[in-house]
Every structure is written in C-alpha cells, then in structure tokens.
Picture 1 (cartoon, one colour):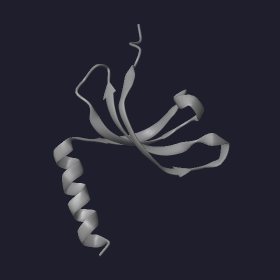
Picture 2 (cartoon, helix red, strand yellow):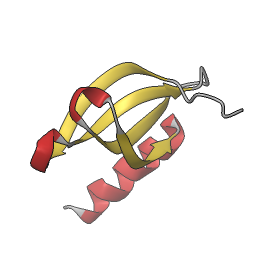
Picture 3 (cartoon, rainbow, N blue to C red):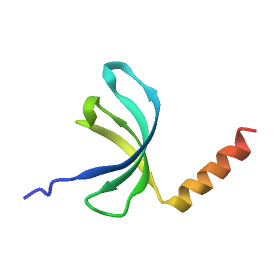
Amino acid sequence: MEEKITFEVVRHIGVLSEGNGGWRKELNLLSWNSRPPKYDVRDWGPNREKAGKGVGLTKEEALKLRAFLGAELC
C-alpha cells in the first residue's frame, strides 16, 4: 500500500516566477510528512494541487546559499 505524502506550508515567503498555466516557482517554509520544516523551492500548479521537483534546505544551508549569492551577485 502506497503511503500518502502530506505537506504543510508553514510560511509562504514569495513567488520567484510564474509560468504558463498558472504554475509558479515559490519559496516556502514547508513541512513534509510532519517532519521539521525546511526552506523549499519548487514549482506548484494552480491551488498547489500538483508539485514539481524541488529542493529543500535547512536553515544553515539557506544561510550559506544567501552568502554565496551575495558574493556572486555583487
């Protein structure tokens, strides 16, 4: 029997882009299957009914990414 995957949007941070058909690339703080929340970047279909592949980052990883981007984008 296949286990249902659940998620909770703990905090919606922002929309990075929007594509055709209402799909949006979002940054959220998400909890998957009642696990501790992570910063999550992924594409979402309208009303978050479908999700594309994404990446989840711990707070420490998100801080490193911010530092990397700050140094690169200067």
